Length: 145
Image (cartoon, rainbow, N blue to C red):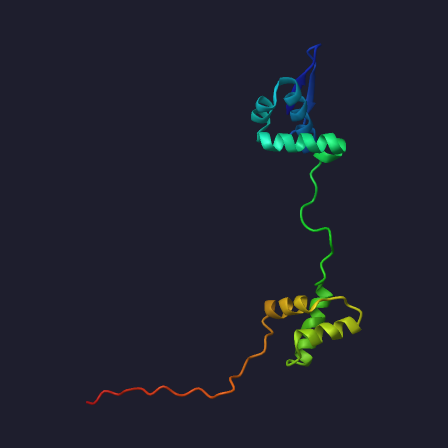
C-alpha cells in the first residue's frame, strides 16, 4: 500500500493495483517534490511522467486510466465468414480469392479479396500448381563393376 502523510500526520492509503490513482499520486509528488524523485519512487521514466502530465492537463483523471490495447474495429474474418470461405473453396477448388470474395459479398458478407487470400493461406487451401512443361528426368550414372 502506498501512503501519503498529511499535515495532521494522518495516512492516506492508495492500493497499488489502482493504476490511475498511483499515476495521479506520482503527478502530485512530482509537482511538490520534483519529477525526478517521484519517477524514482513510482518506477516510471521522466518521459512517461511528462506524457502522463500532458494527458492529465488535457483530459483530467480520465487520461490516466489504462485503455484497452488494439484496434476498436470488429474483425471482418469472423468464424462464420471463415467457414463460408472454406466451404466455397471446397465446392470449387479452382475459383480464385476474388471470385470467393464476390460470392460472399452477394451473400451479404463484406469481406475483401485479401482477407479471403489470408484465410486460404492459413488453412492450407491453395491450389496445387501443375507445371505446363514436363520436367526431364535426371540420368543417374552407374558405376561399372
